[in-house]
Amino acid sequence: MAGQYLRPDRLTDALDALAAGGLTVAAGCTDLFPATERKSLPGDILDITGMAELRGIARVQEGLWIGATTTWTDLLRTDLPPAFDGLKLAAREVGATQIQNRGTIAGNLCNASPAADGVPPLLTLDAQVELQSAKARRVLPLAEFLRGPRDTAREASELLTAILIPDAALTGTSHFLKLGARRYLVISIAMTAARVVMTDGLVTEAALAIGSCGPVATRLPEAEAALIGRPLDPSVITDALVAGALSPIDDVRADAAYRSDGAAELMRRTLTALDRQGQEAA
Image (cartoon, rainbow, N blue to C red; front, top):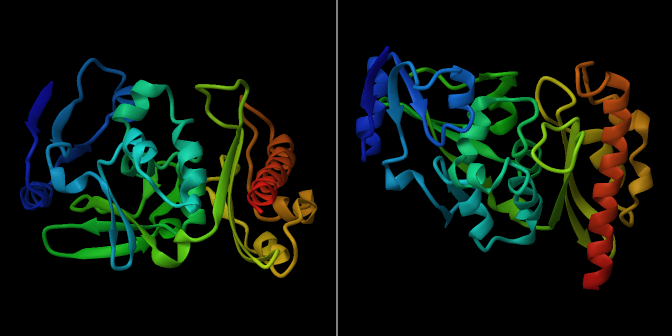
């Protein structure tokens, strides 16, 4: 049976409603509706799409602010630095155009799927999430917010209000690749994202992340360190170097060994694409 449906236009009203408890937060509903397996959402619903203050992308003092109800299409239409090219490539993989028009970036994070397309590129951008309740505001690194499959650090009284990208992560160029059983509209077997900063032909900063190969997407600190101080060389990323950072599973899409090997090759191809872009720009 359907319960009450709330669609406030002010954040303070939404947070007060959450404080009372018992509400399911809804935004684009591209994950929420399929999970219900019903014609309507059950229980009491807090629809956060009525608050204009939660939508959009803006420069702030600390870096870049992405509002919680910003859609993938909003992201694709926004002029952003090359560091966001990987995230934009991921945005084009989030379902069909209709899903990109409705689905929100914050919803992709709160759904906490190991195969969430937006997570690896956001990890390479050192993304943080802003959580607000009626009593407090806190900011967590994305890697701490995502605790496992369908599990986040968000409390029932909190709303994820924004994704924050620090100013230092707005540099460099980025890329994203996804491996699936077909080209479009598929849950990934593995996906890779990379952001690289080059100075005088040498890698001075590298951020690499892999998704769909463990309970949560993960950065590859050892692989990142191996790239620093030399020309961009994809062959540095060995199968063993990648395998040591992953915890893949066997499922209907692929076995663990294939996922691990595929992720390593995909990362090399991601870096090759970045190297090619750098050569063309030189």
